[in-house]
Length: 160
Ligand SMILES: [Zn+2]
Image (tube, rainbow, N blue to C red; front, side):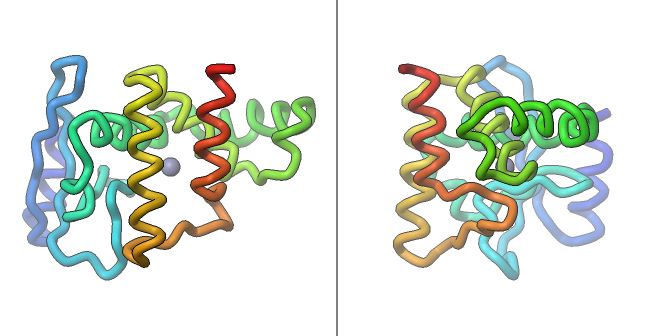
């Protein structure tokens, strides 16, 4: 069932379906874009999760973290989260006040990845992203993403 739309998108757009094995043994469809206009790594679209060559520069653990992060974004509860849960959190937790709701959603997605993998996997991913950024391969959109540095601090804070 979950393969129908990604399959269709691949057929229409000429992308390639990549069957990714999650660490729970389930197969998850990823849409591989060979020559994206903008670099992707892993990115959630309406019709599925896109990846490009940068995704394959991650090791398996980092890929797991990246995919679980994106899966969090695909959850249907996102609407409720954005309108109810995240505004409450922002109101009551001091260190969240400086962030907008989209940025808070990113922290939550990282936390979800942490729960589904482990600290090394998520930090490995964030460090690689940070390296990609230094090399100019990617650029975080700071309007809806916290900086990678803040995301690293956030993930570490769960282990203090
Ligand atoms: Zn995200």
